Length: 587
Ligand code: ADP
Image (cartoon, rainbow, N blue to C red; front, side, top):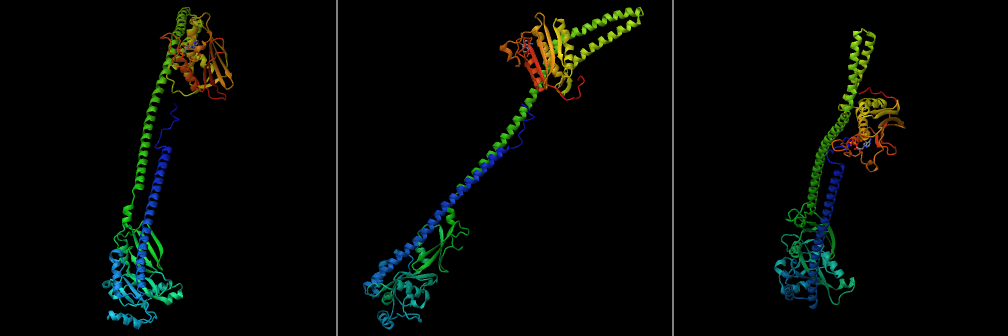
């Protein structure tokens, strides 16, 4: 693994950020959906409650209307001239307080055409009865009876034609024949003077009239009920568990209002508001409905908030998980880097130990290589003495030159040994002639091979061949190949080793061929593997070729067994230097 190419994870990876962002968006989306759903759900509840309140009021008013029509039926039974006792009986039978909560009473208003006779008639059994107030309308619609009397006493004798709202609704009831309510009024009997209205049901003399003309001619009066709106609402809606507040407007007049801060359920920032306009017995009532504080408390749901908090919590966990993963991977990276460095060091050690072993194998030959010149020097010294005794200076000097040359040879061998044995793992690549590399190697090996009768020769060495390399490492590879050849052929008859260095396109090929008959086919694939050896225990380690292969590959080259040759042949193939560069001078 090349750690220089692998980057250490810094903080969170962009994929982690994407996942966290996605999860956050998902949370917000789920929260929004849950919120919208909850909102829609309670909106339905609000509308249902608002509808219920209006419906209840409508139903109630229809019930009151029925009571009015039953009053009309009673009056008709008595030929339009019902007496007070009968009316009282009828009103008592209605049981207003229990059955019609909200209604203030029920009464009869006559359309008086002959006022004097009407008043006389009434005074016959009610001497205190009077009609008031005076007004300039031609119609006279005095309230004749109203029960229960005690609560409505003030209204008895009131001519409703004196006031616009009461009068107009009466005319409308007369002309349509339908039940009708007035616009906003204040009942004379209501001490608090809160908004109210009258509810009329008209009755006619004789057969039921079929046209407006006949209705006007036959109009005899109305059964009516006075309402205080506040009382009506309390009577109608008190039992309902409501979470909405109402305001009822008749035109611009506020008939009833719960939507103000004085109301205990008033919500200054309601969840919902709505306005519904309803046609109510000839009037258009507008209902402003808004949710109350109680509505908020009853239907408030925490689900969206739980989803939001839960989602954010998971996102935070996710973030922490990624953070801890990143930290672990950082630790793992650093550990792997440390181990990689250790392994590299170990590998360098193994390479170096292989090199030293290879040099060791050469040591015997080197000893010979040094001993021979030493023996030569020793002989030359004897000869030198003799010559000096004879005062033969000329030959003595020649001998001295020979001794110098021999000493230089020994010094070169020692230098080569020193060079090759030092640690080269940190050496830079330099440019060398291949020929020079081969010669340096042979200087070390020569004696070892010659002493065992192995012919060592070079062939086709291209003088111009240049490579960019770590000299010591390439020498190590060559010594490995020479040592292996030595082991393979030293016992065979007529052994030889041939070294070639040729150009092949952009590569340099250094070929080592020995007199062996090649490598068995079944082990050809294995010999370059680490620790593969066919040598007896203690002699072979099986790492020479595998290290050599690695070294050559680190030089962007290849080490191959050329199985096509008759004899055993290994090729070092390296990129050659084509352009002229500065050549290394024996690093
Ligand atoms: P070692 O020399 O310690 O066995 P190497 O990796 O150098 O390890 O060689 C692996 C094996 O390759 C050797 O044991 C031998 O069988 C085979 N081999 C290498 N070079 C030659 C050769 N020139 N002739 C025959 N066999 C060879």
